[in-house]
Length: 304
Image 1 (cartoon, rainbow, N blue to C red):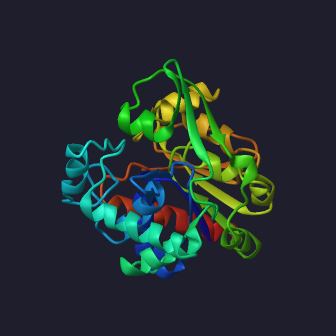
Image 2 (image 1 turned 90 degrees about the horizontal axis):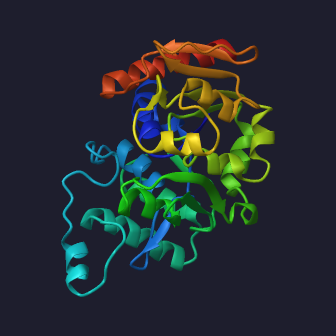
């Protein structure tokens, strides 16, 4: 079983899946198209969200960063005239420093991620979608000009009007070796409730991935309830890319390879080839995450 993950929604789901399936069984392929170098260190927001969630140190108010972090280094740099585009916490920065030192020492991003997961006591296997650090850049096309996702979401608060989304460099990179190996050996793929456009979209845009998924049993969990995303800027991105902000829009993003979609209790979705399951998909706490994981367990059991 492979998970495709971005930030926020899928890390929440993984907390429940760990309780139902065991942490050692989790194999999580994570988006890296939002990664960026900040003050000499590689920041991998989605990878870190997965690690921090499973390590139970994530800041649950934001679902990124480390709980109760301080920002002394960030403000010290600002006093010295260095304006960081992202507000990096001190403990969070230690993660980025170690990752970057491992990369500079010759480790692949997959290897560096494995080291970080172990250091945080996480036994799940966490795999970057590609081993080429920050080689893919999510660019948001707006009325204010084109900007990196981190500028759009972190620096600008997601306020600019969105005209389109593109992934610069996506044609030039390969899926990580471990990702390709898992696609040869695993039968079930679960797409977590992360943003279909900017979190899952880059993974699907890697060479050959959509074709390979057509030979798998693929289940997706909608990140949209009614006409609103549970969190984040998915609504703006989906509209800009021609999809309705709805569970139906999520299905359209994946329908060429999708076998099953889990939607909210009150969403009505019908498709001739995709099985649709209604469940409480809003994960307010660990109990909700476990309940949703049990829904997925039953669906998987019926598939195999």
